Length: 549
Ligand code: TEU
Ligand code: CA
Image 1 (spheres, rainbow, N blue to C red):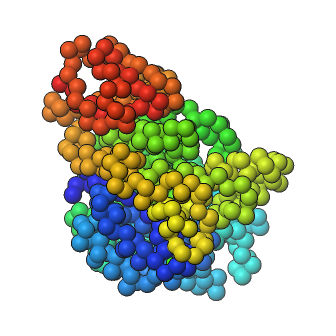
Image 2: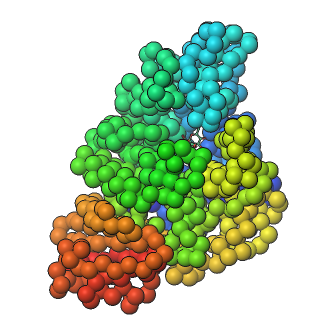
Image 3: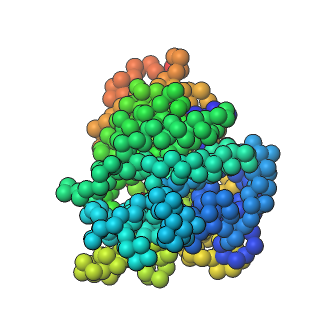
């Protein structure tokens, strides 16, 4: 299937399904759940890293790209999963972490032992103090001193995640070899972790205006490296789907990353729309989301990427983001809000990415103790904010809304103990909501959140939603997000109320004639609730997709 019609499902392996009851999700667990995923209608599974790792960042610190960590299974399990998924017409997308490796990787270990060859796989500098004032994305300096070499090395993330030196052609060849290895194994897609950070500047200098990101984000040779990887690996095979995770990127670069020639990547993730609840750009703060800004960002990207023929990955959630229903929604309208947010985003122009549990409306777990948190970034910031003197209960409140662990709690399969994820105590606490919110509760109910997601996934295989133009409307409306999708005279209107107050739009607001005929394609309230005579009424978190003639 054309990737423009596909829905891709993200699996955070550690929390998806535990097949051997050791409290940790695994590859076999994914294979067991293939019938569920097939029934959902998704065509590709993005699986977060399962390679050998000391797990300081839950696998995003890779110690050996070509082996499976034993807590997740074996290479034989991976091959078995690829083959089994293919029978369901589902492709496997691997998560490749090439901006950095674990410091436990043999390359880094060889460097520490004095090998110059391997030292050049990383950024080591001999200086008296950290080479620059750059700040790591997980807090603290981006440089770590190693006594063995009397040198500093660069780590944009955790100190156990050392940045790889893409300027070195030998390193690049190693990386391309890894990609080719998995292509030969039958993998059908790749998600490249923070791939727009791989090209570092020629000169390392202090940033007097920020944390250093402006020097290495969308860096000087980034497009060259992506084109090289493309031509030497996945570009040689037809139909491979690639998505780049682009950290703090801009539209101009994204147009090139996903250009219609296809010589870089199929599509790109950006995160600007998920910073609309950051106070002054600061993640570790609390603020209501800015709805007008959310629309401005989504629509600017939609229109500009469309004009350039570039392609977006559409998503509300992933393993780094809090749950969308908790973030933008309202508990008293849980199901309505879950369906509304899905409607607003997933009919836009782009490929839909659904994060495990989103399709049943999973919520933030509301952890109240620091002992419940496992994520390295959350624990780092707990320390940093404590040292700044922020009161403990305030930090815990911030974590309960911002921590990455909010989306990492076990998948809620049923209302058994541990939510049917495992028979043993899982590695991270199950959210209390599992008694009400679980797959078993929803799977045979077409009106459930899960039923609604199935409809969305199926509708997205239609040409109109894959190839149609998007025309945003109501940009300044305080509570409704709206747009048209248009293809060959076919026209659909998508409207979503993002708030718990009912609202009514008259046809004139929508530039629709009074004799317009509507056919309801999808809605999250009974048809009669929408009016559709003089105006269109939207109940709390009401959403509708209308075919117009
Ligand atoms: O994340 C990249 C990234 O910058 C974030 O989403 C990050 O978690 C956020 O900025 C912190 O506030 C990717 C992976 O998705 C993430 O899980 C890894 O920890 C990170 O790269 C390092 O590999
Ligand atoms: Ca397990």
